[in-house]
Length: 169
Image 1 (cartoon, one colour):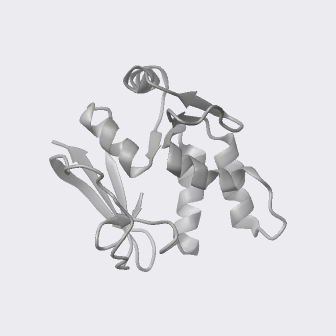
Image 2: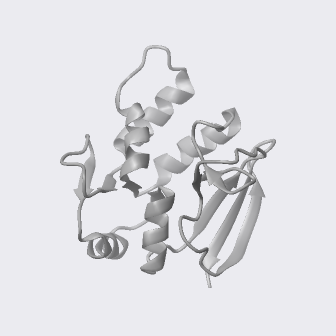
């Protein structure tokens, strides 16, 4: 997830530049699927509809996102869009089954969901895309107490963004 220097996830406060957006296209194309919390899924539904003013990169991202199998964790939604499966109360079982039966990387989108899955021992790696902005509000990247983590790697992905990869200890 994208994070500000002061630890917040707020898609309205900052956005990826062109180089990072291309990275996200490649990452989305390579993933086996993604698990979304309700709020993040509703934000990402933007990519379901074709928009005539999109440039080539936006069209590429939309195509990758539409092709990506999605599992949406929500108790309030009654339906989800194309290529998505609604997950209600059996989150631990469903995500455990996905990890056992699917080859490749399954992303997690949404800080509250990531916190819940982390507490269940279902998150193998945290990737923080650290942006040089301070927003002072929003959802914290870690919705609950930060789990004990070990830095796995760091990589500068764009002129001003660093990806930090951590694994649970």
